[in-house]
Amino acid sequence: MQALLDWLQNNKPLLILIVAALAALLVLQRLTRFVGRLVRAVRRRGKPVTLHPKLQNYGGHSDEEMESDRLMAGGIIATSSTASVAGYEIVRQVEAVFVEGYRTPTDATNALKAVAVRRGANAIINLLQQRSAAGKCAAQGDAVCIEPLVSKARPAGS
Image (cartoon, rainbow, N blue to C red; front, side, top):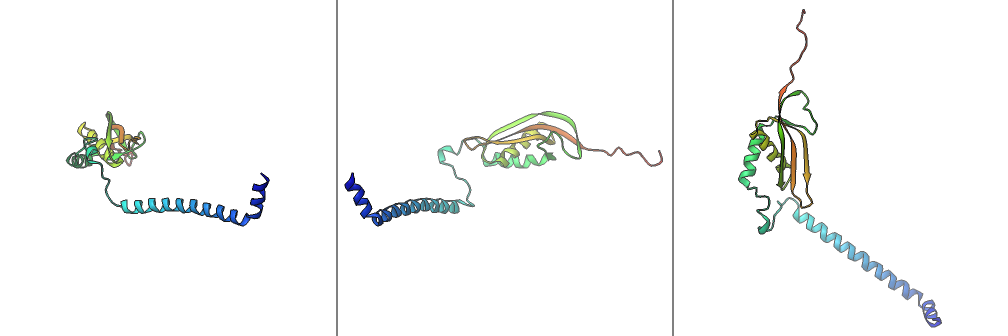
């Protein structure tokens, strides 16, 4: 044991050099990983998400269905995450609607709006969007019929 302590005492500069080299290797390894992730992220930016061919039918929503939902969603006057829509009164509650299995929250919301329009609604209240652990998006809300609020001011002279 004493021999080891003597050797360490006599070789302090060598030990410091070895520890510094190991620390530099560790930093270099982490830096390399970081730069690799950064390069991959820059390459992916702006490109559409591509799925493995075996997984492309997951969710079952074709481009034609998505376009139909986008067009149908135009029949919705307003959406709200609360139980009311400012400047409108709720005339009739149609029903609660729910969709799931979409790639983006926007696609899920468009599909929800399309379902509401097909059921006779012109607005959605209590809108909620969620993403599952598998990355699929869902949306839910209450389909309602709304009308603009009519001013109830008294006529002049009464």
